Structures are given as C-alpha cells and as structure tokens.
Length: 205
Image (tube, helix red, strand yellow):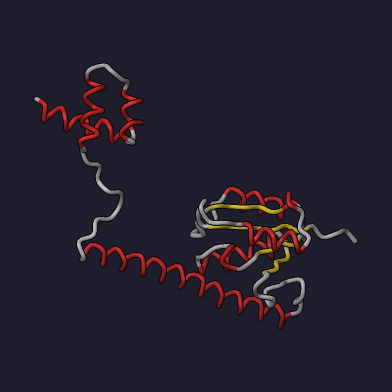
C-alpha cells in the first residue's frame, strides 16, 4: 500500500505574529519541513497563496493527510470553513487531523457515526471561531468609540514644526545641506518633510 503523504498548514493573522509554535508541533509529529505551508494572512477567506498551493497538491495526491494545529487556522468564517472541509475531504480526497481537537480526525472515524460526530463538532467549532472573530471586531469598535468620546486622537500623531526643524530647514533652503540630510537630521519622512516645508514657506512669505 502506498505511503500516505502528510502536509501541514500554518496560518497567523499578521506578519508580526509568531508561527513557530504551530511549526514545531508539526515537525514533532513528523511532517517534513518542505511540506508545511505557511500563510501570514487573515482567515476571513481562502484567497491565500500558500493555502491554494497546498490545496492543488492535495488534489494531485489523493488520500493525503492535512494536519492543522486548530480549526481556526483553516479560517474564521463559519460557512466557509464547513464548505472548505467538505471540498478537502471529497474533492481532494484528503484526510484531516486537528491537533487541539482529537475528535476532528478523519483517519480515526471512517464509519457513519464517526463522520456524523466529526461534522457536528466541526460545525460547532467553526461557529465558535466566527463568533470570536465578531466579538474581536465588536471590542475594537467599542474601544475606538470610547477613545473618541474621551477626546483621544486615533492614528499617528500629527507632525509639528519644532525649533529644531526650522533651523535644519533653513540650512536646506540656504543650500547648506541636501533635503535627504535634512530629513535625517529632523527624523521626518519625505511626505511629512515637504508638508511641513510648505507650511513654513507660507509663514515666511
């Protein structure tokens, strides 16, 4: 009998988040590093480069095993997760194993009751994952509303013209230094530098 190919899928929502914990768990399980696919992207949909590549490989290798650390690494949209699960198990003919939920393991439960239990748990977990995503968005919106109500400014602080900026700006205007050197000396980005320069020019007129 042909040996079953095993693939791992890892997802973190942003580039700042660390995927090492998920990768380490898969390496310890015995998955080859080159068969672990990693996306640093939101789980709102399945338009992810590495995931789509993995899905094509699963289609080309029927009866492979896909390993996930948790169901929300697959996605966070309830309907989309259940739809994707069905595609993986029927169209790609892949088995799926979820580390933090042993009952979600299609290699163990091949009979009708096992399939029913897996599908039921999948729907519950998918629903919980989506509700958590909605709760996070709600908390973020509430936080922004509270911040606005208390008079806090959101986003980046507005750049201000300081005495140091004026002195460095004058050197630039007098041809004593380049614009790039002035930006370095004043610790300003190009857009901010020219924006403040325009303000100063109006004052000088």
